[in-house]
Length: 182
Picture 1: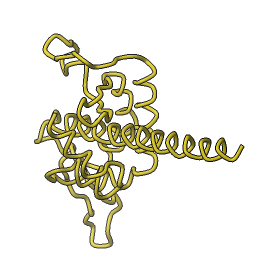
Picture 2: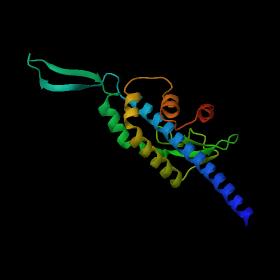
Picture 3: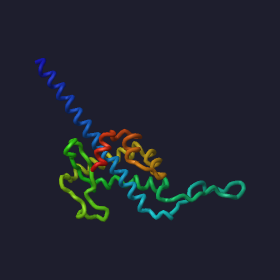
Picture 4: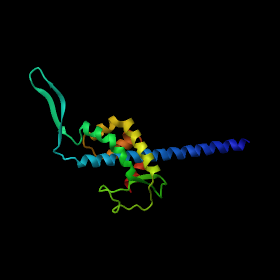
C-alpha cells in the first residue's frame, strides 16, 4: 500500500504543476490580449480630441483650475474602455506552441470583423476558450485596474513586458519571449 501513496503524491504534484502552467498561460495570454486591445482602441482616438480635467469650482481669485488633456489616454476614457474591453476575448482562439507546448491566445477575427486575412491553422476556437479568456481578462482588470490606468495614461514602449511580466508577474520572461517570436 505504501507504493500507492507515493504514486498518488506524484500524480498530485504533476497535475498541480500542469494546472499552474495552464493557469499562467491563460492569465498571461489574457493580459497580452488586453494590452493589444487597449493599445488598438487608444490609437483609434483622434489625437486632437481633448477632455477637461480638474476642478470646475471657481477659485477665490475668479479663475478655474481646469486643464485640457488628450482624451485617448485620459482616466475617463481608459475607465470606459476597461468596462467593455474583455468582451473582445471572444475574438481570440487558442494555439499550442509546438516547441514549448504552452498555450498562446491569438486574435481570430480581424479588426474589420472578418477572418479572411488571418491564418487560423492550428488555432482552436470555441466558446469555452473565449469564456475562460474573458473571465481571466475580467479578473486582471479587477485586480490591476489602477496599474492599467497608470500604464496607459502615458505613452510607453514594451507595455506587454512591463505590465504583464514585470509589474504583475502574470507572464514569466521565457513565456514572454516565445509569444513575441510568433
